[in-house]
Amino acid sequence: MKVFKFLAAGVLAGMMLASCGGSQPQLEGVTKAQIDSVSYAVGVSIGSMIKQNNLGEINIDKFAESVKHTLSKGTDMN
Image (cartoon, rainbow, N blue to C red; front, side, top):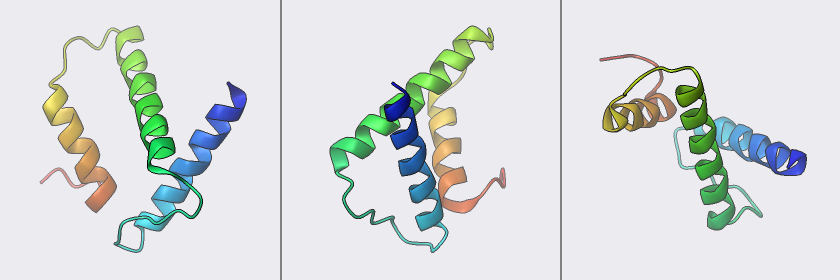
């Protein structure tokens, strides 16, 4: 499990650094299946955190929209 978390962190860090250039990340040696697995694991982690902290019901569509916006453009709420 530690290896998976390390791989996930590495892939996410690479994606974030690559996204700073304004284009889609092209990670050499990383398959779409690996990115999908890491993406799902991140979703499970965030979902578990929301559930454990009793944050109540959230609008999943708005949540997904905010994640997409933040990853593509920054944290501006407009």
